[in-house]
Image 1 (cartoon, protein in one colour):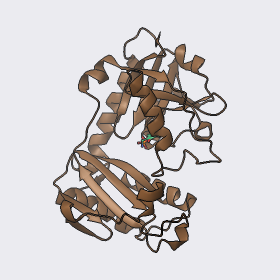
Image 2 (tube, helix red, strand yellow):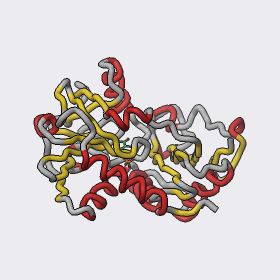
Image 3 (cartoon, protein in one colour):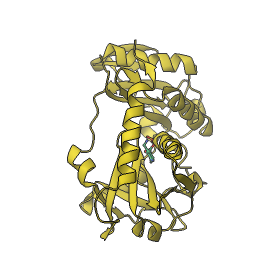
Length: 289
Ligand code: PMP
């Protein structure tokens, strides 16, 4: 496998970073998870924009331009003959001292990995996910804003541990006010009486690109789409609940905290949006060539 490291493609065995890299020492950095479908990188420009916004928020200078970075993503896919896959784009603070001071890190490190995707098993898309609410609350926006896609995912990892310990693959995270934020690695939506709702980002959600696309597709399909503050109650009594994310795409949730959602089967709105999303993914995006 070829990895893009710093400014060029190298063999996987040569793709090594310093143990003094603050990405490793402090989770200091930002990243994106991107998908390639049918020989195209899906929504590359939006991923690059979000990456630069995340970097701005943590005062990190990305050493390549948006154009150079986009090209590097395409080149990494090409070098690994990826036409359908998952791309991990990571910018770490770079090599520094053992102290926290990020200003002592001379140059941010760039890492791009293009590989095959590990999805939820296909049967889960057909049967739907069972999730639980976890005790770990989503980061307070004035501590680490969940809108920043940072390398510091311990908040999400702790939530995931609770989910797995409860026999679930995903979970529901609330904010410090007890309002619905998101899942550990996906955004959450509810469908009730034909209205599609998702929490606003200030409730503790990443502004997911799949979330955005699904909101656009739902509007195109004639649904009313809202960003609304939600309690767990709103999810329990919804007709349908689903999660969105680059890796998961759109997956139905049929059980939350042992409450069956709707009739306990993936709903028709979820299925319709999933079909529309997959169709869009086949034709939109930057060609890998
Ligand atoms: N929330 C969190 C915490 C995530 O890690 C992700 C996955 N990147 C998402 C939501 C979904 O975002 P996107 O649709 O941009 O992948």
